[in-house]
Length: 271
Image (cartoon, rainbow, N blue to C red):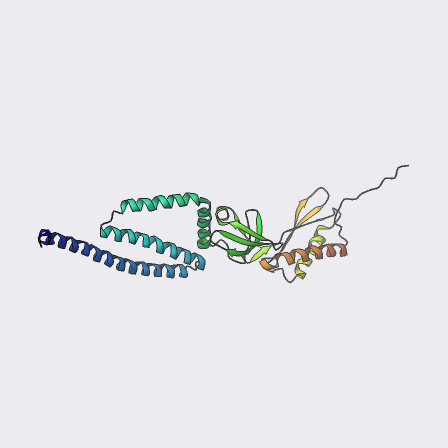
């Protein structure tokens, strides 16, 4: 009985009420904060879906935003209860810096992947040239982009270097110009040669009428008159047109009696 009389019930009651109110406040903040985060993430998903972001990028950014906001909410809740959060925030920042330094290359590739998925310099199925490689885009991932090379080899390029370098997209415009240079003998008639070359282009149904193909004298070289032949075709028909025109041109020039100069070897007999 004597011990009970020495207890200051007013003091303990005040502490209980104080901490109770803090805990209730922390719970209220957690509930409201979770509700706000939920709706922010929902809005973020709608914005990215409307902007047609890649699905894998959407999931990653949503999860990254979710955990970042959750960490901030936890720190606020702990501060409301009365726990010192300054040192905790410093520890989290230091850990983040250490991880960032350790994964510097990976983070650079990640940032490059995000930029590629946002700005979309190419899409799956495009034929591109980048980092000294040419291939069809097979897969765009967070850290790397995979191409299928022209000889059916798989090419993997880190997104960091890919996003920081030059990218040539051969597909995006829908059409491509096929460039040829054909040389004929100096005795050949220029007008007739142009007619023969143009007839080859007009006979190929893969070559577009617009833009119109071009046949013109390009150069008076040392041993030949060089003609620039520039037909246009759909991107997917580039190589068929290249091979077909190359073969048909040789046959047409031969049929017209127009010579293509080439080096000759003369055997001199010694007596």
